[in-house]
Figure 1 (cartoon, rainbow, N blue to C red):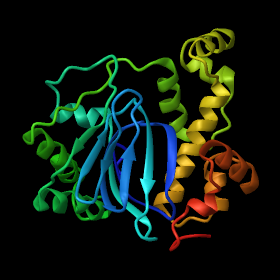
Figure 2: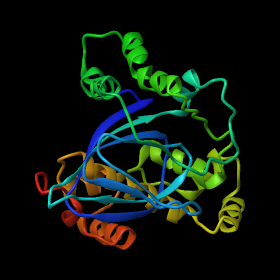
Figure 3: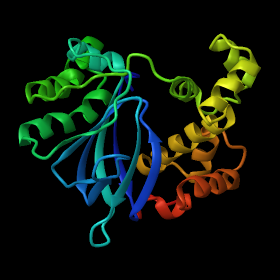
Length: 262
């Protein structure tokens, strides 16, 4: 799969709220069944329905609720773009020091939705040269720009966000604080102090990255929970289950869509 673009489908068997999720990349979310409610910290909450689009800028934290309808699994189609991809189309836009809100588009043309949904098959195709794939993958961003949408990226992310992006490059790795500190040009003591000022720690960041990765895997794949636990860097499925429940207030097996429980 293209490292700059990820396309996947989300399914979920129960209504559930997820707090303070970090967006590593700009994410486009098309709700297909059910609804999604966004709970921003400052503005009024908003609800997204089937046929509508919600865009989460990279480098932001969000709290949202996926809602099922009449007992039918929640479903959504998602595309994630790296900052480099966004900059190719929105290169004239200003890079902000902070981006605080999501973008809600209440109407999307059938042609736009059709083009977007075709990306899943495009990525898996072995017949098209990478240059052509790259061109087609940019199309949704071009459409958004033509619709008057302005996407920007954060110029310099805070240290905790930089660490989240770094850890996400190898979620299952047994990261050592000395190794991470050296990568960022700090001593271990300086790294601890800087993170304490941000009211967090390296261990908390690593755990959060692993669990959010596990959440996406639970929602978008049919992998057994035991395998997801290993992929997230947990030594046992029970350790993953306990940590997941503590973070998201729901066991993995309950969250998973009814058609893909293991």
